Image (spheres, rainbow, N blue to C red):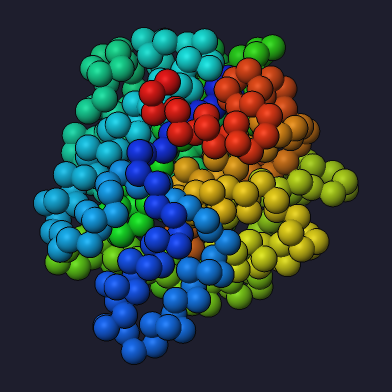
Length: 361
């Protein structure tokens, strides 16, 4: 049986610029209206995504400029470093830990390339020890939040008592999208201060699915590879690996709660159909999608933070889908000390405020 790992703190961070969906749609019409004959029909996408606003590391005008690899990479390093520090410092504070207490740092990011890695860039700024193990992970995409948590938990499990810091950072600016970070502090200890327990993990790689999701590379940076058949693929393929994981993780016969990465309104509906959930069951997911959009890897940790702050307790499956095409799962038992260690108050307004303020502690 998998020994549970205590999640001692969880924090999220957002950049300073708010992009209201109506303004994004207006700007898109100005930028692309003359390019795409069918743009009036395509504009419906902005109204049907279930998104009201997003946050970005750069102001709207920045995205309308022609940008090359150098400018995009500089934006990635600058923004990712800032978001890393904000999320990590808040997660550590909520876990009553200091940076010098951290033994292992797992950094998950797929929207830019940094060598030296992000953890090396921030080590001296936040006070990490020089002997802390650094584990940078690239290429997990939207599945990075769950797969990264699984990896961090395994490392904590392998060294009981040591402190593992997981930081998930995406600066989707490089692909004309949006930016976020989340961080969690884990340790294989029996702690009364744990906000959740992290248990078994599983991953399923679907065969012959490399063209479903990923990056392409062109002269100006990363381009999004995303199949239009994704919702149908999820509805048809997700159930089998989800059932297999639930059985192997020992959930028993009772109905299973899921905490999922909200890839989009259509994907959420497909996930509900695949898992046999009633329509609109994934309410926390839709709230996060509405207020932040799809933030790639950190999104599922935003959903978990929201769920914990609003009464989530008991066992659940944390789930996300990403390039490969991959389904990632982690068993989690939540609600132990949620309010204290996530720093979230009651109500959506308080939740949004805490996210915005997390950049400044």
